[in-house]
Length: 500
Image 1 (cartoon, rainbow, N blue to C red):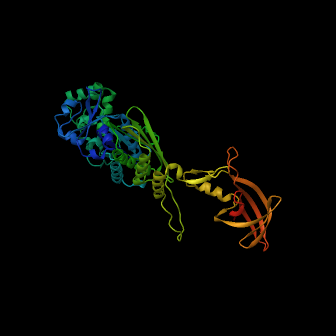
Image 2: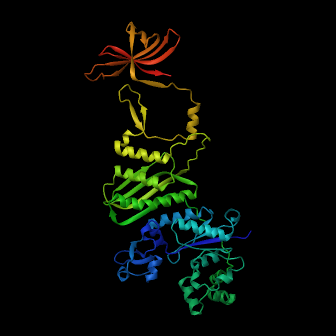
Image 3: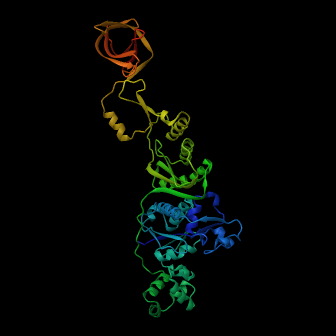
């Protein structure tokens, strides 16, 4: 089996890590500064900035001579999250990914795609699909594929379009590349420059023995790399799958619309990374670093995992309107928990059910109007008080819980009479004996009670109402299970509910 290695070269990674979450800066001249003020220097820049003449090592004073240059501070946290996003993007093709040592402010990742042709197609199709996925994550990268890993690493920085090297043609492709394509130390670069060498072809044609005498085994290694023959033992990364994005601001923002403008691209990235693993977002946690050192956190848990940006953005909008942060925002961290996409098999003639995402938004709108503690489903408490219930959020039952509910014994349904039905009651020893309801006579077989419903013994109020659980039988043989209420103040009886 012919090996196949694909190198992804992301130039100016520090700049791309900042621009990918700021769509308004796409295509603009951006310079990234690093260091301690006032000794800051340019460590990375966008292609538009370099086209104007911006170079690494420039000071902030030198940048003032350029026109329309956007200056940003380097953020190691954003670079860390951007690297995780890049690994998520390429891991959809292969789990064998190796990160190369950093060179020239770039990030190089090598993918071992050996044997994947039956899944993704030919090498040309693989690099084309990989390029499309990287653009989806707003990464501009050079991509090269070869049977020799070092050949792909040397060729990727100079590849404007995805390129594939046929087996046996490595030396021909590398012949015209400059010596900077190799991982040279400063001492090695100086020696080769003194010898008058400029390209990899010049290095490949040197006598091996004399090269080893002067540069040692490192010289032989560099020559084999220039010839496309040096083998490599791949050590793949094993990153942990986490969904998180981070962005920091130069000045605090206080407007909700400005925050939502930033959250949109961050949610796009999280959804795309989750979809790469055939997942959706089960919950989203928003952590805000506030001006003054405080932290503000909110968590959203939709009824079902969501993969629509508009739904999550609207839920965050409604939640932040109801719970605004108390100070200006300096940084935003968005974390998400992945979840399986909801799959539901309906019958051919079954009516279409409402979308869970629309239900989440509707409930959020209602909660913003009436309050969060008044939206949900009622859960009865173990009390006889008139307000003997609490509101719980709506939840979607899983398949296991539904199956468990089906195996339980049948429960009795209680139907309330609205309005209550008046009746005539006859007592025996202060307990219900028989009653007349809608012209029918019922004989009481069992009576449980009385349950005192209103009035509280620790106050001066009197007990004004009692309830009885009744099992009665009509003269026609009909059985009736019901709840009867006795109003002690007005001395009348009425049927409150029936058991089915």
